[in-house]
Length: 131
Image (cartoon, rainbow, N blue to C red; front, side, top):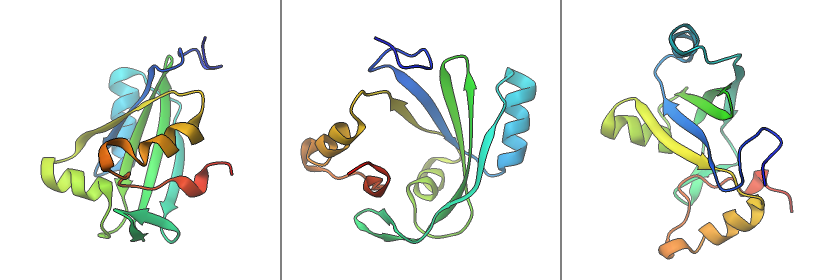
C-alpha cells in the first residue's frame, strides 16, 4: 500500500536538516541537487508549543521540498530560545537532524510514542493532531 505521494506505508519519507541561513540553503539544494520548488513557513512555533515537557517559545522558519518521493526539510531557528533544533546544532553543528517515517495512523503512533521506553517526545505536536 502507498500514500498518495508514492511512498509505501512505513517508509522513511523525510530527511531534515538544521541550517543557519534558510534562503542560502534552499538555493544550494536547488542549484546543486535540483530539489524544489520550496514551500516556506517564515515563522512557526512560539507560544503554545512545548520543549522537554515545559512551555516553549522558540520560533523557526521551515522550508519543505520534494526530491521525487522524499521530502527535504530545512529548519532555521529565529531566536535563542531553547529548542530541539538549537540543542542539536550547539552539540554537533548544523546539518542532519532527523528522519520522518510515514504511518497510516499518526494519532496512534504519536500516542504510542509517549510510553516508548519510558520517554516523552522532546517537541510535543499533540495540538496539531485531530482529536
